[in-house]
Image 1 (tube, helix red, strand yellow):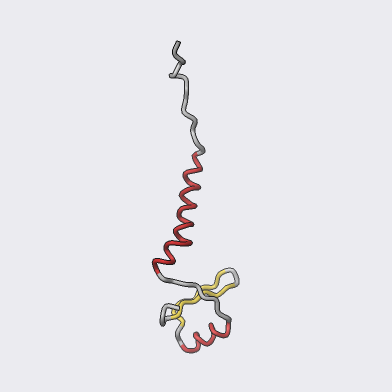
Image 2 (cartoon, one colour):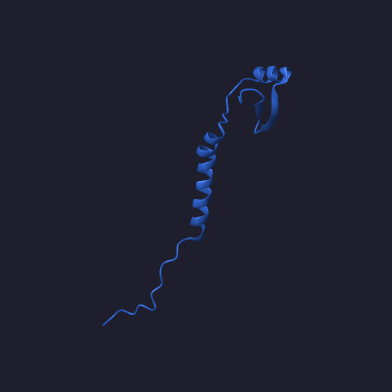
Length: 78
């Protein structure tokens, strides 16, 4: 006799696994791939260097986040 194939259902996966994989892929791209393509680097500097660049007028953009100062220098892409 043949087994009854009609009543067998394929097991369904967790619907959130695709969403989780999508998020992990985007995080990986943002962490590794995209910074290398844009040649942007985060260099750790002290506050005195930041103030010196500010006084020289070389600061292009400033962002304060989580008690850290991120800034973009107008010359040499530093």
